[in-house]
Length: 135
Image 1: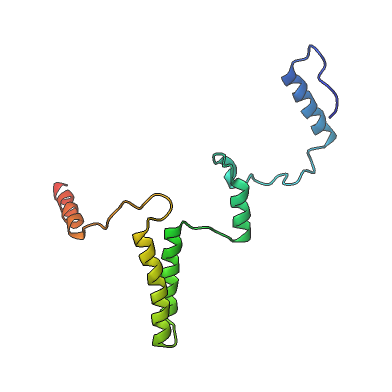
Image 2: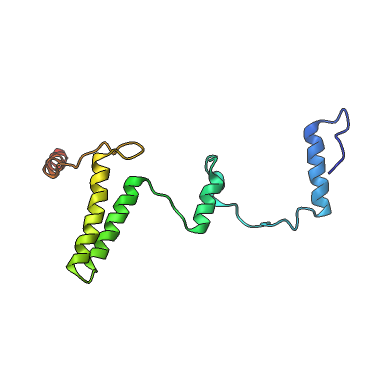
């Protein structure tokens, strides 16, 4: 489409005419994805890093925050230690992960802190019983 909008013609009607003419010529018939549903992420809000996230998902790569990465590493280390062939290797695996856990405990990780402490189970049970008794 290289022609210019003629003077005095409403822009919207001129664009609509161009689209109708292209449809009549069949220029929209062989487009890739014709008839396929739109991707699920079309409805979401705009994200500037959409292409990075899509590439990471396609490559099967993910980046976890440091605290979550350490949790995962600690779980994997425990499994490896339990499957280790000797006590010396078990101690080595656990000592290495414990050093990392202590470092994370005493040095605040990047990002916001958790800011939460464990729940008191007895207090939660007491509240649950009170609410049930009110019914």
